Every structure is written in C-alpha cells, then in structure tokens.
Length: 311
Ligand code: GYE
Image 1 (cartoon, rainbow, N blue to C red):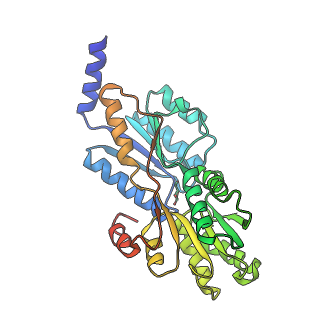
Image 2: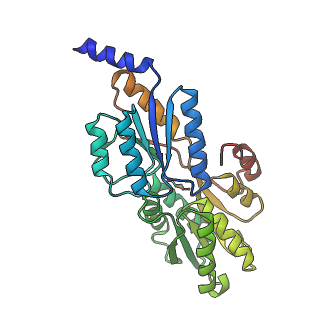
Image 3: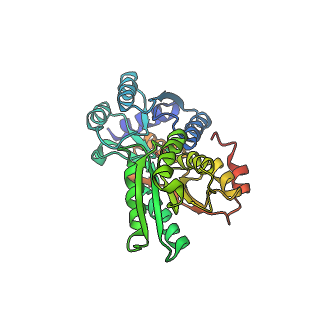
C-alpha cells in the first residue's frame, strides 16, 4: 500500500496541476496586485489556474467552489469575503478530497476544513497602527475617525480590535466615529466627507485610521476638498503599503502604513507542492510579515519599486 500511495503522489506531481482560485473581487489596489501575483506564480510553476472573480459576493464564491469541485481540481485557493458561512462548502471540498488554502482573510470554520491559511496577523497590524498613533501624539488630545473594511470580513473585525488594543490605556486618544468604507477608495472618500461634516468641517478630527490604504487615499481627497491638509491637520494611518499611499507620503499627505504582502500565492503553492508530492501537512497558519512604513522610509523609492507589481 505504501508504495501505491507513493506512486500516486509521484504521478500527481509529474503532471500539471489544476488549481481553482475564488477571488473576492477588485475592491482595492492590494487586491488587484494579489490577483496579478497569483496568476504570475501559477504560470511560473506550470500550474493551470482557473480564476473566478466573485464581485464581493459570498454566494458567487460558494458557486465557484462547487464548480471547482465538480471539475475535479487538484486544489482550491479561497480569499473569503466574510468570515462566516463557509462550513457546508468546505465540507464538500473535504469530502471530495480537494485541499483548500485560504488567502489573506480567515474563516470562522473549524481548521480541519482547510489545509492551511496564508495571511498576516490582522490583529497585530491594527495594533501596530494604534501604537504608531500613541507614539505620534504623546499626551495631546486626539479624536480619531475610523474607516472600517468590509462588514463581517476578518480584516475589518481584527484590524478594529488590534487598533483598540494599541491605543488602550491612552485616554487622550478616542475613536469618535467609525463606519465601513468597504475597502474602496470611492466609499472611503464618501464616508470621510460625512465625518468631516459632522466634526466641525474636520477641525475636530486629529487622526484618521483606515483599515486599508485605498480608503485612506479616498479620504485624503475628501480632506483636501474640505480645505484641510491631510498628513498635518489630520494624521493618516492605514494598512497595505500600496504604491499610492507612498506617493501620498512623499507629498506629506499620509503618515504611516503597515505593509501586507500581495504575494500570498507563493507560500500557498509551496505548501501545496509539498502536499501533492508526499502528503506533507503544512502548519495551519502561514504568517506573512507586517512592517510599519513612515515618511522616514524613503516613500518615493518605495513607490517606484512597487508601482509595476500589478497594483
Ligand atoms: O488589506 C484590503 C483588501 O483581505 C487583508 O482586503 C485583505 C484586505 C486588504 O481589499 O486592501
């Protein structure tokens, strides 16, 4: 039996593998880069990638996964738009013996329903952002407005928790308004406009914490249109490290970002390769780095080195 199993694995490894990728959509620059890099990684490795864009809808993701299962793919990559509601479809994949790798967002399901999850520590990212602000404002009073990511998504939940942990015990810092901007530039701008209006034209706001850079970039526009200077009148801290936030930083209009690598597929395919080869089980969580960038970190250079990555 052992040799039959070994031969099956060798046989599988020799032929081109087919992987279905259920992507959330294209809500942010970061997401677009992740899509580009996943396609690139698949091509470099000779993997046949079936790509499905869910346009932000969980029901589309569930339908795509069912279709991948019906096609008998060798693995499924899933970037889950929200955290809940995945049990049944993940059980179906498990039943069909198709390994599922989660990319960048997490699910509430039991971890035996997927092979591994590649992503950052989303709570930690929020905490880094919060601690940056604590350091920046010292003892000064600081009224913060928060742009949350997609409601019910793990990064929106965890980045909120993490930031609150980061500012905990500093009563001079207070989140006075918090609303979703769905991770998009357009909604980031729109919601920031309403924050500005509600907060004395923005004069009562000390800082913006946005769950991603795209919403921050939209908000920066709104702040400028309101006649204030982003980066000075209102401090801007966000997450992702997309090229445009470095451009804003170089222009003095943004103050800090926490990096999230868009190359989640590299570690995911490495784990799958080992699994296909001899059944090696990866760790349940493959963690990517979260580095803080401020205007001291050569934002113009960071912009240049990132701008062709598919953002
Ligand atoms: O930060 C944001 C995006 O899921 C962690 O999704 C990811 C987030 C990323 O659209 O820009």
